[in-house]
Amino acid sequence: MLAAAALLVPVFAVLYWLTIPSGTWLIVVAAKALVLVVLVLLGVTFYRTSVTVAASGVRESGFAGPRRDIPRDEVEYVLFVSFYRGHTLDTEQHLFIVGHDGSTLVRMRGRYWAVADMRRVIEVLGAPATIIDEPQSLNEFTRENASLLYWHERRAGFARR
Image (cartoon, rainbow, N blue to C red):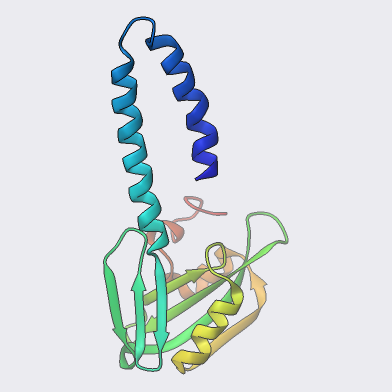
């Protein structure tokens, strides 16, 4: 929100400065109101994003999707893995909750979720867990577990970090 304000305050200040003398400032007010409504909606959507875990299953409220309830009996295993970020030695942890058909039911990325929260999911869910301690590149992971990744991550060079 602070970044949006840092960008929008000077832009709207200049627009008001340019439009007040000509009397067309009401258009700027309408545009500003529209931008604020969009930002509030995005903020509400962001803050409602959650993953709730119980021994009975997982409830995911994603950023752009509906709330999903996943019963515990649909979970085959949990995979916790570290990826290298881009061409650096920095790592980012990912948690995959995998279904019986081998598809990803829920994915938690270290960019958005704390590692302690991911480990808590493993603990509370109680599903068999595979923890890969050795960091690996996305290419290495794709060779073994391509079906767990998003479609664009499976395309060579398309979304490599």
